[in-house]
Length: 197
Image (cartoon, helix red, strand yellow):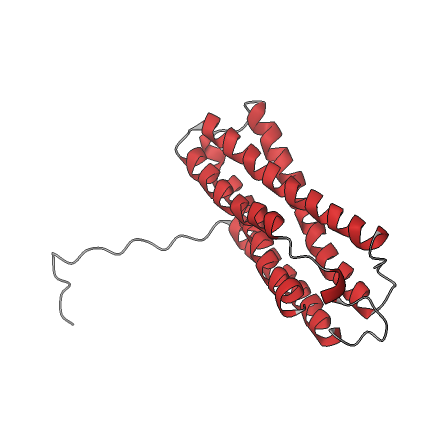
């Protein structure tokens, strides 16, 4: 057996990943499976409604809402970095902007649903399209609501000066959830408003 050369760098010891990150990745995997079922159902039933309205007749592409939601991934990332550096005031500002962008997106979804229901006559029971549309987009909206509750809680803690630099890892775990919500919207947007029209 040959001796280990003296100049060979020592390998860093393997460190277990944080339980929070592992737990969040497990939650994201489970949620991704649920979304996959809803997306497959939407695609399967696309064009099979025997009565109108059809997606092309009633759906408008929510470009502004999408820009707001996807921008919130950037602001939450910047907020994470600010907290890691101990910059509490920039963190508060960026976290609030993330919350506001998410709230604008959710408000836009509410306005879209109001228009579809009261102007276009599309409800969850109108036809297969209505059922699958409200189920899929509603599932995503529910996840946005959960995300906003989490964002609001962290913001309240930050404004009460209860959030410190040492909490950056925990905040980062929650940010993974928000990134997931944004990533899922890219898929939902593509399926519902691009392919489905």
